[in-house]
Length: 350
Ligand code: NAD
Ligand code: WQD
View 1 (cartoon, helix red, strand yellow):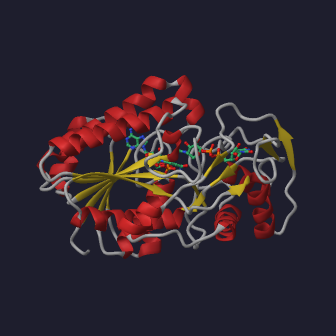
View 2 (cartoon, protein in one colour):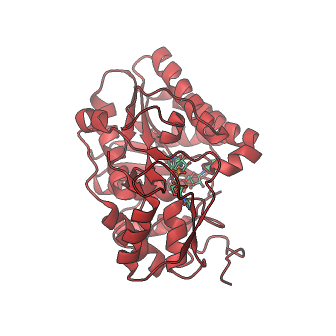
């Protein structure tokens, strides 16, 4: 794939940085566009070191039409991977306009900037959250979509925009990847998830308990209709997810014009207790926890049917929950405060 040029929005972030490594190893020429609102340039320095490759970095907001257009004109990409966005479900409820502006408006801006591409191709970060409370498991792509949050609605609206754009634009390809629960880190331990403030998600919270930054895990609900009463999710290793993007780029270079949507998950579910136990094995510590009431908006269980991705993208998840927990622990124990971006003054253990 050498000489194929890819713009990666949000490339400094958690999933973007892991995907950059896979792209650079595969020989793609890359230009990152990021405003670093939720990431640090340090992640990109580490990607460059790990991959021994150079790539362009443009500090820009995807809502800035002039800046984005200028970057596209200068770099002349063959494809775009669009990670940039705001992703905190709770924050989206209090800042809905910001979430629509970045996640929907930013996507519109990118599509306008892609006008000169022949043919235009985009891989989009969508989310399993678009399905809402599932009617059946595992969830396939035909499952009804009814997101229960502002964040989820921004993703579904962006998907609709991409579908309409692909239908109206000759030769255009839009590949939408609905990620289930991305966790884990690169096996070097040099890049990983670096949440700002108290983590909203399970794995980074457990990681901070393990490293001593938080006292104990609060398990949100012990009375769900699952095998041990705690919530069940399809956790996917971020390196498997990164590789799904390379597979999606290959697919977009050969598929018929139009749009496609793929679930990106393992097809297997793990409960909160099972993740906690796997993490205890990884870090060789007993991790304190307590059960608290359910978190509003949470579903009991969510598991992907990844058959479409396995068949059409020729990709499948290879790493299990032990790999996820071991790599997370390697990252967290080597980098207890992440990339040191915006020193976290809210840490409970200080
Ligand atoms: P992240 O916050 O680590 O990365 C997002 C990146 O986008 C950051 O580097 C941030 O600085 C950048 N960004 C945000 N707003 C921007 C703007 N206006 N202009 C330019 N750059 C901007 O998040 P992530 O976990 O890597 O997620 C990547 C994508 O995947 C997001 O679109 C997210 O909604 C989606 N997604 C994430 C998950 C998950 O659990 N992590 C699950 C499903 C979907
Ligand atoms: C997993 C399980 C919790 C934290 C979220 C977003 C979704 C997507 C992925 C972006 C659940 C339990 C969690 C804690 C806990 N992101 N939990 N204590 O909610 O499945 O999905 O991230 O697209 O949109 O909603 O992931 O990691 O928050 O929770 O008990 O401190 O862990 O109740 O059962 P979720 P999560």
